[in-house]
Image (cartoon, rainbow, N blue to C red; front, side):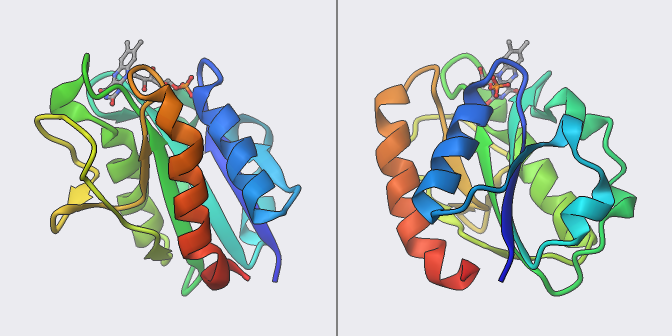
Length: 163
Ligand SMILES: Cc1cc2nc3c(=O)[nH]c(=O)nc-3n(C[C@H](O)[C@H](O)[C@H](O)COP(=O)(O)O)c2cc1C
């Protein structure tokens, strides 16, 4: 099974998380969405896809400019992760991850890797569906000390489904 991690990141936080996720998964295919074309993404069997949140609950700029219509993910297993700031943007925490998940589902993806909201403090988030985050929520602005352990726990939960 070929697996890749693809991320969009403005300041490097999501990039760092993407690299750590790949390391924990034991894979070396990690791509910035600004540098990869859709055909390459479509060539993978399974994907881990991440974005930070900008504006007010929006996708990171490179994802915002991306043509999601060019993705062919029918039936493919995809896990999403997001980076946000639960204190300064409490009303739209990790909203970009919610938007990303929606667009990937429209492209046919079978999403895995939802997580509990326990341990996070925020008002509202488009990334919460049926009481859970649609993927892994990370917050390097306020809880950077938890990022690695959250990634470790998440990867160990989804690893079998990605192999
Ligand atoms: C102008 C601006 C808007 C932001 N909007 C949100 C937001 O709506 N929700 C959120 O959770 N985080 C928001 N953030 C926080 C970023 O997502 C966070 O700092 C993240 O770590 C950036 O990751 P990156 O370096 O990978 O782009 C915003 C940050 C800035 C500077």
